[in-house]
Length: 288
Image (cartoon, rainbow, N blue to C red):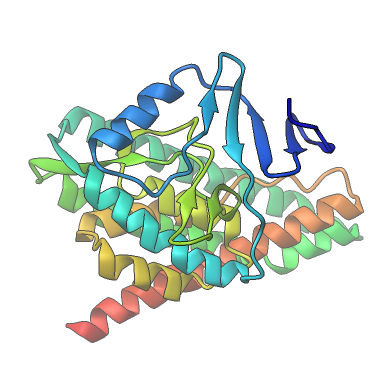
């Protein structure tokens, strides 16, 4: 019987070190994980970390040490692996125009709601004589929100004018949690944490990556590298831009250090996505 030398808890998971190996034991949260592995295997996708053993309650993996690569370096490897994954799992379906219209109307409604929400908040604050620090921070940069909503509205109209005349769309098998936390750059690279994998839009995973890791990676170079391996159609690019352009609904109360940090992060994300979208649209114009 092997001697257990070290036992470490990592959240709900654990690392067990034996004299000759280290295992990572992940608590099982998905009871269809075997179906995910089968789908990937059937499509010859091999850039995911396969467990050594699967039980009713746990997934047992070999433990892989973190590398010294920067987040930006890891993101480049991730999108190259994502392109391989998507090229192997691409499928097509007939576009459901009712679903297209429903998506368009839901996004239109979301944008209009955010226009009203932020307009009312600005009017409320402008009636004050003295501002809390978080109120001043919000007001000083509030024009960015309106600009971003205008951009989102314009992009949505562009997307809808194209896709409503299309007959089919591409789908891929999405990772579901595609971020730097769920990718190991060891060897050629491995995706991990596949519990949310599903068939979905081609833009879902790259959107998730950008939302999770926008502050530590270069969006433009990462996206362009990815596009060389898995190029988007015009409507797919516009769909990604629409989803990134729509800002979150931010609450500036209660006034606290944490609220200030959240608001700064909100504006940082807003500016980063705005620059990325406008840079990509300008590049398209220059290439014509």
